[in-house]
Amino acid sequence: MVPYIYKNHKIIPKIFLYNYIMIKKFAVYFIVYLLYLGLLANLFLVRKIHKKVYAPIEIKQARSLLPLRVVAELQPINGVFFHGSRHRKQIALTFDADMTQDMKNRLASGQVKSWYNHQVIDILDQTHTKATLFLTGMWIETYPSEAKILASDPLFELGNHSYSHGSFYGKCFGLKPILSIDAAGEIEKTQKLLFDITGTTNHLFRFPGGCYDTTMLKAASKLGLDVIQWDVVSGDAFGKNTKIIEQNVLGKVQNGSIIVFHLHGGPNAPHTADALPYLISKLRAEGYEFVKVTDLLI
Ligand SMILES: [Zn+2]
Image 1 (cartoon, helix red, strand yellow):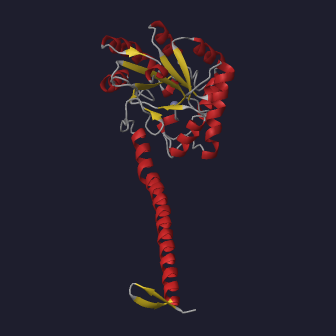
Image 2 (cartoon, helix red, strand yellow; image 1 turned 120 degrees about the horizontal axis):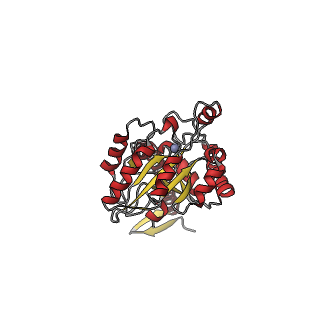
Image 3 (cartoon, helix red, strand yellow; image 1 turned 45 degrees about the vertical axis):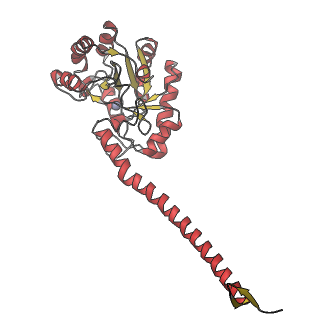
């Protein structure tokens, strides 16, 4: 055997060629390995950038109660609906029935007479105004028969507003933080109460205070719920001036708006019912139709 080969007009020792092939092979493997590492690093960076840069922006925007960038008409943005179609003159009035442990304690001690603003429901009924009511589980437990009556009223649809109205992300109006491990339980508990007490098979969820992150969003969407926030804040929570509540709504309302009010009344939302009659007649006069959230999003 001759340890030489003839290649490109040169005589090369076979051993050199063998080494050359080995080096070439190694180089290819090395480049593939580098590309793989690069891909991993990119994925890691994209995740990190999204978490660090975009997620806080989303949360900040949700908190500042501004609608996020509209990708397409009626497409939820990162799984959250802030409004319906901007092409139809329809709007949704929504009322949250909050209940925290502190609110429950104040009710038990007699400090607060009631956390159910019946007047709000009376006005909606008298004016045949459709609305969506987001109930906390603790509110349903406190007012089971009222919740049942609300569910049977064809003007209304019910939604889930968590069990104990805690913060699903960071500092949120002083609400008690909910650990991510408890998030699904908070939502599921109220789903069960809505079904057991009111017979509602619910598909709507609203984060208390509008505070959440992507992990919490996933927890809600895993349970098959549409997350419904808002694009108009009435400011009835702790609002001391009826005129300001009216101005807040009339100044920001537009086609497809989801307007947030509160149903618990008491010292936490004392003027909701005072603002409603004028708002309802004024918005109707402007040509708006009141619809439930579900119908707004069809
Ligand atoms: Zn709330």
